[in-house]
Length: 367
Ligand code: AMP
Image (tube, rainbow, N blue to C red; front, side):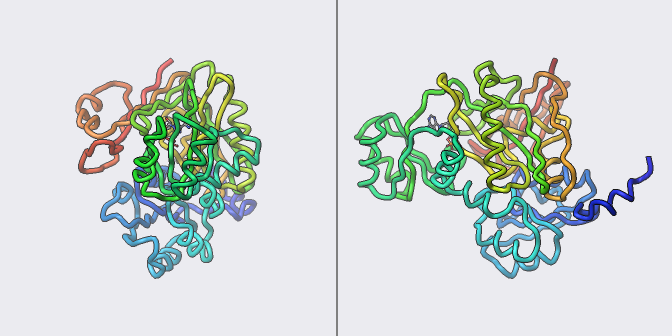
C-alpha cells in the first residue's frame, strides 16, 4: 500500500516520524516506551539524574541532570518536539517549566493529583469511587485522632514519594503508633484502615488528545512484600464481575483530569464491592504483559497518545497471559529463561541484582 500522504494533510496534529519525544525519567518504563517509539519511527531523548539509567541503552539522546536544573531543562525543550514522563515523582515545577516551551503529555494536573495520596483519594471519592477508610495525619496528635476514628489494623502512608510499599508502616495496635510515625519520617501522611480484599487488580487505559479512550482487559495482580510479583489474565470471577465498574470509574478519572496517555488505577476486590487504592499517571508494571499479550501494548498506545496518533485496539492475543516480575536474583536464572520456549523475557540492563530491585519480567501466553 502506498504511504498515506494525504492523511498527514488532514491530521496536522500528528507528530511526523523522525520527531523526537523527550522522556522525563530513565527507568525500565522509559526503556520500553523508547522501544515502542522507535518502532513508530520516533527518536527519544531521556532526561534523568542517574548516571546510566536503563532507558539510555535504547535512546537516541540522554541528558543527565537534576530535575531542578532549569538550564538543562531549557536545552531539552530545544531538542525535542513533545515531552512525556515515565516516573510520577518528577517535580511538577520541572514539568511546568518544560510545558511553557513544548507540549507535555500527560499534563501537569494528572501528576499533581497522583503525587499526593490525599488529593488522589479526595478526587476519586468526589467522582463517586470508594476507597479504604482514611484520615489525614500531619502530626503525632492527628495520628491519635485518626486511630480513634478508624482503628486497627491500619497503614500509615506518606502523602508523597511512596512506591512499591516504601514510605509505609503497618499498625496493629496503639503500641505501634510511635514507631510508625518515626518509620515514615514524621511526614504528612494518611492513616488508612486495612481492608479485607480477595484480590488486587488494575485498570489500564489510554486517552488520546482528542478524548478517545481504549482500555485493556483487567489483570489480577499479586504483590509480595509490597512489590508487584505477577499480573495475569483471565482474572478471577470476583474481579471480572467488578471490572466494568472499575473501568467506568477510571474512565471518569481520566476524563475529569483531561489525561492524555496511559493511566493506571489499582483496585482492591472486596466481597462487598471494589475499592480504589491508588493511581499512576503513566504506563505501569501491571501492564507489561500487553507487549506480547495484547493487540497493542500500553507503551505503543502511550506513544500514540503523546504523538497525537489514533489509538489502536487492545484485544487479548491469547486467552491466558501471565507476567512474572524478575526481582533481585530471580533474573540470575536468565539462561534457563532464555531457553524456555514461549517465554518472552525482558531484562532491563540493570547491573546489580539487589534484593527488591526490578531486574526484568517474563510473559507467557497460552490458550
Ligand atoms: P500501595 O503502595 O498503597 O499500593 O500499597 C502497597 C500494597 O500494600 C498494596 O498493593 C496492598 O497489597 C497493600 N495495601 C495497601 N493499602 C492497603 C489497605 N488499605 N488495606 C489492605 N492492604 C493494603
